[in-house]
Image (cartoon, rainbow, N blue to C red; front, side, top):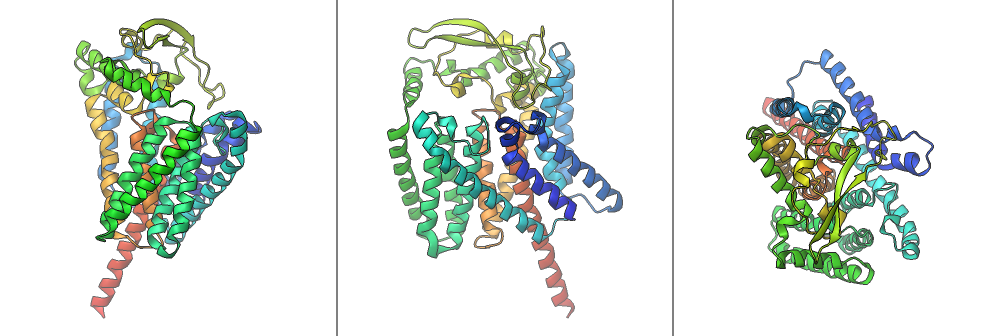
Length: 478
């Protein structure tokens, strides 16, 4: 039992700090940036050994079945479009889709104890505190350079992921604030401070995601509390956070004009020509040209996925002036992935499938890497696995949302698990929303943290329910 807990905790720590040693200090080879895959692999081996000696019924066997169906769809779609399949990219993308779900299924079927779960919870909160302290010490560098990527904690080269990890702390503290009413003011100060730090990282997509995920989580917590004044408190709290957020952004941000470009796109009827939205038009045209792609997609690593940005030696980008709607397409070399340090061998002289659709219509530039880029998790799912793959895979997230809502109500006020539930639920909402902007559902460093947190909540409920059942039976017997 100890080995499972050790591996899980190592996975959590590695996801948070590994880039500092590989990309910053450069004392560890960069291929260790995929340590999440290595540790998940060890957990798979441990699980198989455990199953040899224990033939208990699998928890959530239906999810295993649907994951198998999803993989079959991926294979069928890739086979039918084999002309455009670059095998390393396809395998990489398949691993990215499978890793978090397999990790979750393994963890809920291993014998974790309440002590293991509590250790995981405390370690998560400790890492959040450490990252917050590091971020605070990086603020002077930001004030001097005005580069938002100066505030990154130990998430070298990825301030977005650092902001996401800090949001786990916000969601966790919301759960703590609900439990310890005498310290509510202090918790509000802590939460506000973390949010201000996140706002200094000028990633506008994360600002919107932060607001939406906070609103939904607070609304659900309010309903779970069943207090008449809960809704009023939530409205007041959101107004407070919104005011602080507005003041912070207006005083520090130098790129708010990008929001004006979105307004201009709406006024000029160019909303469908924004890169992120145009991506779905490209997929529709692909499905029209090949009817079977509507059901099973164009195959893995072919259409706006994370693998299709990593493995193709060339991609295409539009340059021009948005007002005049005057564009030039230029070929742009793509460097090898920073995260893999040369392990990824890019497909030279191999044109990506999406190229023929990406270049067929002009873009309306927002001059934001997030908005202008067509790549995102949902475009990837729809384009590469079709409607069937999208429904099944997103179904995993819908199922977990329902599970988290149930446990949030069931364990409302439980000091042992409630903060971890709110952290898991809030981070779940955050990742789901960010999937519209980028390939966050495919980023193992984040998804393995998320699904590990969810697995510990599910295990707690299983252990708690089993012990309650035993107590009832013992009571009846006596």
